[in-house]
Length: 68
Image 1 (tube, helix red, strand yellow):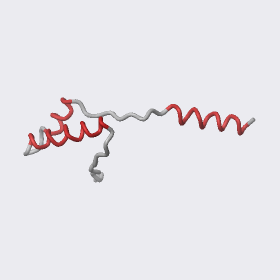
Image 2 (cartoon, rainbow, N blue to C red; image 1 turned 30 degrees about the vertical axis):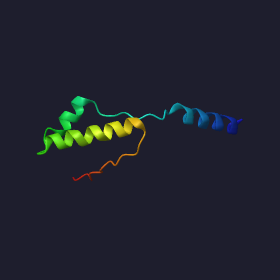
Image 3 (cartoon, rainbow, N blue to C red; image 1 turned 180 degrees about the horizontal axis):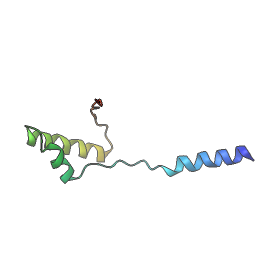
């Protein structure tokens, strides 16, 4: 009985997640690029990455380490 509940819980857990990605809106892109010196280049790059993400292509996401 316990193994039945474990397998049922495992299947429900796997089926609950969707394979979807959320991209940035136009306002969020402008907000991020507001502080950059080359604002137009930043907006162009983020829009290109947004299109690639929506098409299902891989994109490179930089990881910024947290400093205390």
